[in-house]
Length: 328
Image (cartoon, rainbow, N blue to C red; front, side, top):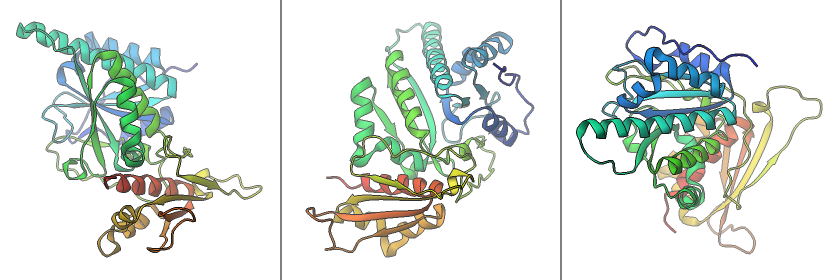
């Protein structure tokens, strides 16, 4: 088994938490990704003496782990540093356990210095693409509710208006350390279904003023995702061409789902603006049946999404998230 890249920190120009070179290293290290936001105290625990703990973490998990340099904070978080991880599914679970445990240890040390008791809660955030938020939420919020109920950890996804980095939002977790590990791991597994995940590794630092243009259309990393768990009303149909050995992202794909009239109106948006933006951003074609043209035996309308696989799954996630904004 080959060793992961060294945990030695690279020089930085001061503009990036995760630079373009770091992002390339992560993409080369594996096909599963996660970005976590941790306190400066936690970063110190993670590094260990001379960076020894972080090096050991990379070896034990077989993941590539990039920690933003000192004083390089995720925009709008008042001092949260970025930990980006890439590797196998099992490797990411091991890394998540170590990082959340480091958060708990940093909280313990800080409380001890302050001379106060701990509240028994470990806090951590993840930064995920907008398209992945729909997968975590699930239809009408069912998926995030299920994860919270299973782990006992409240999960809060920031609103689009609260976003401080283009195209992504924060997800907050708080609870007992073992429960937080379980909740973060479940969310991590779900967001791997978002084929655009590898595009969101590069991350600017607070106050850098550096814009991050997120490419649309075919995502950086091929990872043909299955339909989101917990969305039984969604029926995906994949069509492949015999003998075609090209990139799976380019294979034709079609997904159909059903929505209420209210959800359909919200997905379309004022003057069709939101629906147009989904098509433009993903390269997929999205069609919604007209009002009154219901799926037989229901009062629901049909949404058909077609095009290259990667664009279809990105559009699917955006449509699902938009639908969850309508309360039943």
